[in-house]
Image 1 (cartoon, rainbow, N blue to C red):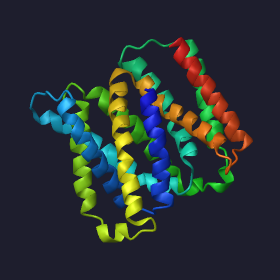
Image 2 (image 1 turned 30 degrees about the vertical axis):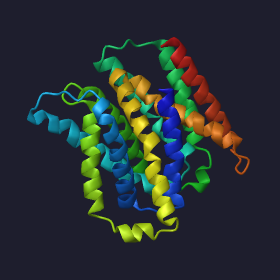
Image 3 (image 1 turned 90 degrees about the vertical axis):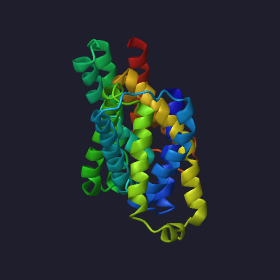
Image 4 (image 1 turned 135 degrees about the vertical axis):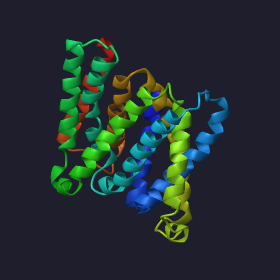
Length: 276
C-alpha cells in the first residue's frame, strides 16, 4: 500500500502539470494516460495471473472499469484547473465512509466503535483541509465534477473487489484502457497536442509518469481485492504525502486550516491502522 501511495503521489503532481502547464484537454489527457499505462502494463502481463473461463460475463468488468476510468479522466482537467492535488485528495478521502460500510455490510467485516471514531477524525481532517483556500477555488463551477470523481474512485475499487472472480483485475484494466486509448485517439489531433506550450517534452513527461502509475494501479488492484477499507485509505495517505511535500516547498505556504486538516488526517489514519 505504501508503494501505491508513493507512485500515486508522483502521478498526482504530474496530473497537475499536464493540466496547468502542458494545457492538455480531457481527450488529450485521456489518450496520454491510457496509452502510456497500456504500454507499461503490457510488459507485466506475462508475469501476471491471467487465467479465466470465457463467458459473456467477462464483458461486465471491462465495461464497468472502462466507464469509471473514462469518467475519471474526463472530469479531472476541470477539477485540477481549480484546485491543487492536495485539495483534490482531501475530497477523494470521503470514500472512506462508503468503503468501510461496504466492507461491513457485504464482506463480513466487523463494525468497530474505535474504527468509526478514527474514521470520523480522518473525515474531520479531510473536510478541514478541503475548506482551505475556499475563496480562491470556484466550487460552484466544479461541485458536480467533484461528486462524480469521488464516486468513480469508490466505484472502481468496488468493481475490482467484486469482479476478480470473473476476470483478473490486471487483464480487466489492460483491456479497458486499451479501449479508452483507441476512443480518445479518434478525438484528438496529435499535431495540435504536440504544439501545446510544453511541446514534445510535455507529452514525454506525462507518458513516462505512467510507469509509476502502472505500478500504482497493480498495487491498488491488489489492495482493493483484499479490503475496500484499505483501498480507500490510499487516497488519504497520498494526501499526507502531498501535505509533507507542500510543507517542504518554501515557494508556497500552507494556510493554518490546511495544516490542521493534514494533522487530523494523519492522526485518524494512524489510529485506524492500529485498531483495525
